[in-house]
Each structure stands twice: as C-alpha cells, then as structure tokens.
Amino acid sequence: MARCKVGIQLEPQATTTEALVDAARRVDAAGFDSVWTWDHFFPLYGDPDAAHFEGLTLLAAFAGATSRVTIGNLVTCSSYRNPHLLADMIRTIDHLSGGRAVLGIGAGWFQRDYDEYEFPFGTGGGRLRDLEADLFRIRKRLAALNPPPKGDLPLMIGGGGEQVTLRLTAQYADQWNGIAEPEVLAHKNAVLDQWCERVGRDPAEIERTALIGERHVDRLEEFLEAGITHLMVGCSDPFDLGPAEGLLAAARD
Image 1 (tube, one colour):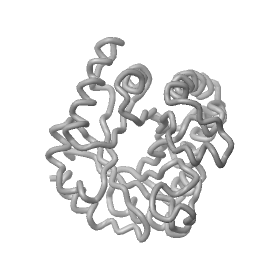
Image 2 (cartoon, rainbow, N blue to C red):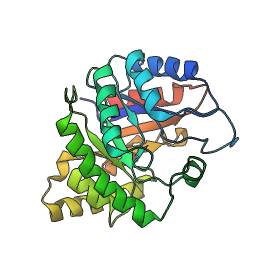
Image 3 (tube, one colour):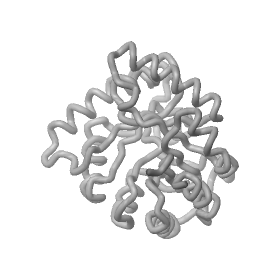
Image 4 (cartoon, rainbow, N blue to C red):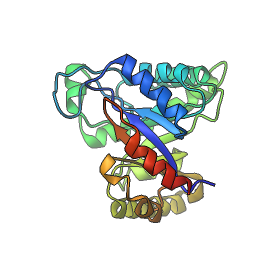
C-alpha cells in the first residue's frame, strides 16, 4: 500500500489550454493519484497580465483527457458562483470524469479577482460566514439533482483558520487541504482533531492533504509525520513532472 497519495496542481497561468490538457494526460499516464488546478482569474505571481484560464472549465477538459486520476480545484472560491450552480457544475464534471471529481472549496482571498469581476470583497469573516451558508446550499442541491453525482464526490475544504475553517472542515468535509511547512500542518491537524472531538466526528474520516512546491518534494517523511496522506505538487508551464515523480516513487516504497 502506498504510504502517501501524490498529485499535481497544474497552474493555469502563463500557459495555453493545449499545454494544460497535455499535462493532465501525462499526469494520468505517469501514475499520479490526482490532478488539480486553481480557481482564480488572474496570475498569482509573475507577470500579472500573463495568459490565464478559468478553473471549472479546465476540470471538464481534464475529465475528458484522463481516465484514472481524481480531479479538482485547490480550491474553488465559494464567492465566485451561486452555490446551487456550483453544485450542478461539479456534478456534471463528476459525470464527465466517470465519478472522479472532488469539490474543493474555500472562502476566497485574492482581491484582484473580486475587484475586476465585480464581486463584493467584504471581510474575511464575512466570506467565511458566506462559505458556511453555501455549504448548506451545495449539499441541498446535490441531494436534489437528477441524476445525482456518479461517484462519491468528496468535499474538500481548503484553509487553515483555526476558529472557523477547521470547524467547518470537521462538520462538513471529507478532505482538508493546507499550505504550510510540515510543523505548521502538524499543529493544524491537531486543531482539526480537536474540532472533530467537539462536533462528534471521527477524525479518521477526514483525509489530510497539502499543496507543496518543488522545493518540498524531498521532505516526504516530515509531511507523513505531520499527518499528511496526500501531497499535491504545484507545477507551472512547461509542466516538468520530474521532481514530483521522485516524490511519487518514494511514496510508493
């Protein structure tokens, strides 16, 4: 049994749709467990005006280009789409992929997205309250859709806020995603376990995942000790999978 799942996040900036879809095919063929992208409308670093593509549409393309990896966004911003519409979109992507979709979701943070697309940015606390209300609406819509999702359609919550985000994770999520050094992730995992105890949830029901950079690929043992069982390596065009393939081999030992 693999010690850890390994996935790739294909960054949709400074690239082309052809390169993204080709990379998703290569991730699938190379034996990785998952392929992801992000849900933003502009580059997060580098040239702020570089080419950029939308995340949910890319997931539909990844669904058709792959046959075995799970697919999802790290993570979808709850502010950008009506929650009922988002539930319908990810349900459709789940069918297109044969039941391999994950609904990753978070409260949002990148102000340029909000400003240029004319979404109200508000406050961090307000966005988290909206996320909690949206989770209820998403679950309600998924239960009403005909047909329902084809697969399990796990819910992933991304973020490390200890008072609200990790509480919501304990209440609603099947997976949690963090972005931090191993020692920080170990602390967040402990806080999540405490929230699970408070809400009456078995902590083992929540898969612990982390997005890492290439500079972290040789630190598998540290992430395992922190309780992480699924690592996603961020990858930009030209989408060289070599560093992550070394991590994949170590995770399979």
